[in-house]
Amino acid sequence: MDENLLSSASDTLVDHAVDEVMEEVMEEIDEMQWRSVKEFADPSGFNVPADSSVARERVKTNLPYYCYNYLAIGGVFVALSLIFRPWLITVVGAYFSTIF
Image (cartoon, rainbow, N blue to C red; front, side, top):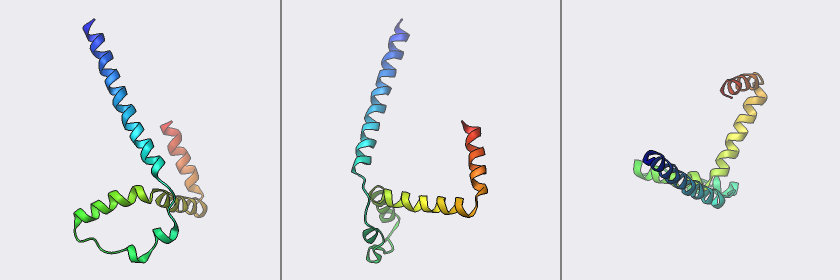
């Protein structure tokens, strides 16, 4: 009987932790927005970071800030790949059919 109670308490604790993490993720997603191309590609914003810690900090800052811009660029690359190599549709479809 105690094992069932312990298991139930453990499941509840895990569910609560997952709910909190999902809530934080959803708040982060809500804060994301499309940034203008002018702001995204402004050459004055490009410079070499002083060291790896500065580079890591920039990545942590820029990935969420420009998330939709990066997704759009990735989508363009995927679309162009599928247009110029239509057989990729078959390969990707076959791959995903084995997973699901």
